[in-house]
Length: 267
Ligand SMILES: [Zn+2]
Image 1 (spheres, rainbow, N blue to C red):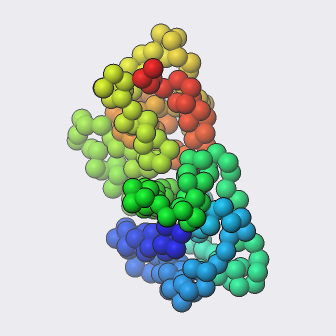
Image 2: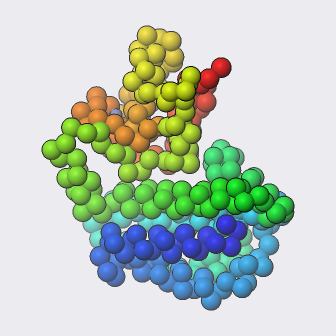
């Protein structure tokens, strides 16, 4: 993980090359970044983190560095009618070469949800095989998250495609930006051997046995539990307005807090 973050960017490039037209700014940025990084690989491998306990999380910091720029890019591209440019793909390398601070600040809550302290420990102790796989899974999830928060925010054609795919079906609509890192465990949580259903949780809220869900950033009415914690919901959901907005990990904190306190669990 520590040295393999570039593989995640490469995977992202493969997916982006399918979704985006050739020569798209985002695609070009990814390619140039990968190329620059390949030449820098030896130096990257020996690069110490400012905080030695986070050495194993170096790759996660690299991905976060890029993710912040991707998110800024897609946000401003969404607001703009003309092509917006991305930061220099070699920005990270330049900062390191000039001895400047490059490590993005990662809030405590985000670090916890990304299990950064676990990753940090991986570099010190030879981890059991299971943990290594865990780090790889996490890296893949991080990639998916970046991809999805990036690519689904904009590009009208991907939006159109998503809508078209649900036309004519009565099946649930899938949340393409489902946050596996934050809600994967809630999604599969069981009580008494059975997976918890959103419908049953909502019923408890309705009866006042559980507090109301946090407000949606779309309209201030309660967030849609199924959409965010199960990754699927009915297109006719009364809270469909909340399906239409993308949340960052930070913005998910109220819902995570709600689930920590209230989501049904085995006693
Ligand atoms: Zn819903």
